[in-house]
Amino acid sequence: MRENILKYRQRPIILAAMLLLAAAIACAGEVQNLYIGDLPQYICPSSTPRPTHTQPPTGQPLWPPYFTSNVSWYQVAPNFNTITAQWTGQSAGTVYLSYSGSMSSYPYYWPGSGGYLAVDIIPGPTRTGLYPITIPTTVTNATIQIYASGIPNSLRSFTVIRVYGTTWPTLTPPPGGAPGSITPTPRPTYTPWPTPTQYVRTNDYFVGDAIYTSEQPSGLRLRFRVTDIRGMSAAKPDRDGQLQSIYLWTVEMKNVGSVEYDVFPAAQMYVSTITLPTGADLDGVWGASLAAAEEAGLTPNYEATDIQPGETKTFTLAAYGPRGTARRISYALDASARDRLNPTVVPGRNIVSWINEVNTICTGEIEEP
Image (cartoon, rainbow, N blue to C red; front, side):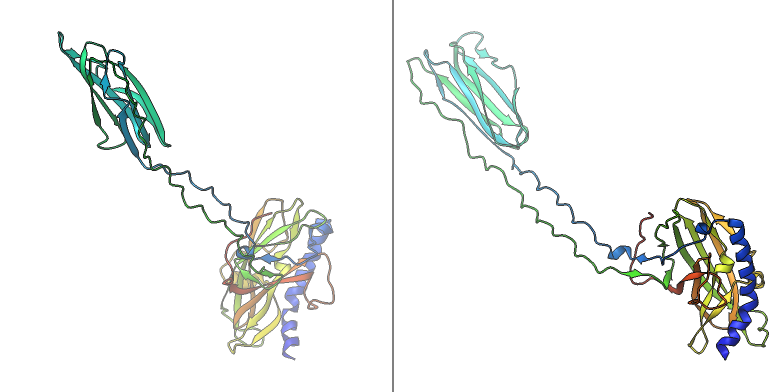
């Protein structure tokens, strides 16, 4: 009995909406601009499988700084006047070399290289270098110095003396001992992210979540988002003297399709469940009301309108209902016809609903198509 009374109380509002909706359909002229034939799906972004993480390459080998040097022999003679300065290094920077000497007669000093010469650069991998030095026959002894700019305390000094008899030296090979490279530990091969369980809702959407309809044969496709559901006490009781509330909600609609969408929110949207002070849920149809909007301080536009492709429009609606809390807001996706499955006073069909809860199950927002 109570359910019938509730429906009766709403009948004048819904009947007026039906007449306005019929006029809107007549003006629109195209049923396809009013028709969404399926239920949109909300797919939780954080439950969407992610691609396998791309494995970065293993880093380049490391070459610890190292430098050592020597000379090929320590004597010169009438038949042997060239000495080779020799070095081995890695990550050593620039190699510098100088040589000079003394003479037994004027001018007594041989300037040799005239200072340090840059003779090699060793930026990384192990490298061995050679530099031949010819010592004039008038020089009785010479000093050769070698160092690397990237190796602290690497300077070494070698003395070469002249002998006056024929000599057959056993040449010293270039130095070694470089530690070589340190190969970084290979990065582990990433395994694919675990595939999460898909979380999908096809009705009773949460406040704040964007939901998308599939593309209709006409090219129509929409994004809906209810951003707020709230209530306030009405100033006057209902016609039966019972306390009542004003329920307000805001819905955002964006046309992400390719054709115009014709909509009449005040006729297609209503409060469908109210939680009473006792905690019980009461189902019914409490349609949008100009009087409720004005009492709530809104300046409503309850007329039918169109939403062009790429356009977004926001509507705030208000309805009177029994004292309590709005639990569910519903919307008729198909305003072109009615069927017996819906409440008899609701214009349109293919009803979807939003519950007055925020999404605590998953996070993020799916990409716009």
